Image (cartoon, rainbow, N blue to C red; front, side, top):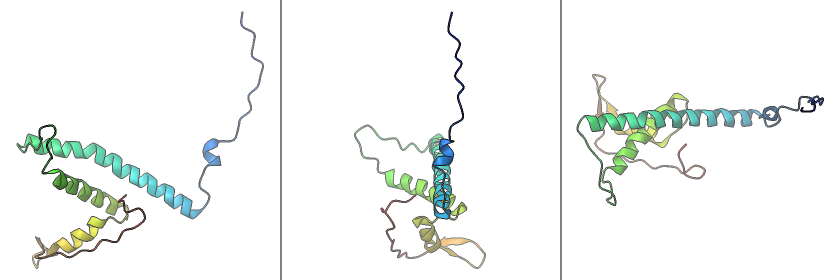
Length: 131
């Protein structure tokens, strides 16, 4: 027979509240981190579907092991373009937003055409990494 446990456990401080943000800047940082996570999780879900559909349409970009993928940068540009669009939804700056503004010229009929030339200089912020 097991002895009865007669110890009453009192509630302790909520660890989440102890580490909770206290300033507006900390709250904004936490909100932005949640937004970045949402963007990255969304990309993780949709990018394989997009590339899978491209492959289903007959564009097989797979290369043999050990070969350098000549389309790797094009694929990275596509993913970063999507990231830029999702960042814009949350009013988060992304370098490709500026590229899109400069790259496409609106015509009189409301359509867009590629600009004849493009000159963009990126400013490095923080550690140089895009969110």
